Length: 77
Image (cartoon, rainbow, N blue to C red):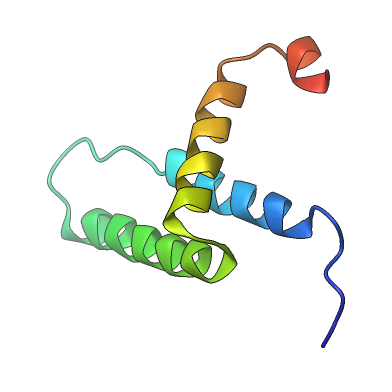
């Protein structure tokens, strides 16, 4: 079994969560756009479920939300 680089799973989880928050807003009815959102959310949740528990996923979402509200100097600390 390969060794996991410290923090790699955290960075991977952060990327997945970030992709949820970066989904484009649908401004008018569009089956293609809705399918894209559903497929993306399903894939992200599936990937996150392999990384950790529901509690871990919730924790990562909360961290992402809080960090997205901070200025870059505060994030660096």
